[in-house]
Amino acid sequence: MKFIFKNRDLDLTSTIRIRAVAKHVRMSSNKARRVAHLLRNSTYIQALAILTFMDYRACEPIYKVLVSAAENAYSFMGIHKCYLAVLAAEVNEGPILKRFRPRARGRGYPIQKSTCHISITLFYET
Image 1 (cartoon, rainbow, N blue to C red):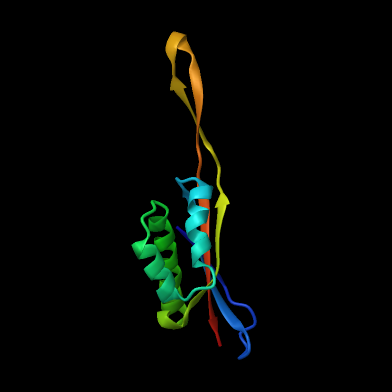
Image 2 (tube, rainbow, N blue to C red):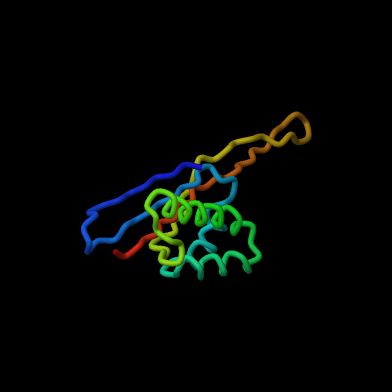
């Protein structure tokens, strides 16, 4: 997992943004997008509750990225988790792993294993 931190304009009227990214997650981006779409414009506590009770395979890596972003906000900036909210939850396509499945008569059928990049941006209003 790779972590990217962005702090812009640290005056008192700005928002602090924390971004965590998980790259090369072995999952279709469309399946992860339908879970990430539900997290937008919710608080951190609400997003945890949504991910905990949903029964999709995409919930686990998104949950890990969300918790990671909140832990980074607490450890590096001292922002408590209950004051955080989800600003953006994006799922982009990653590289496709190309494999071949052996078939009859020495032929091979192509198999494409898709990956995705999950990024979650939390913000704290100062």
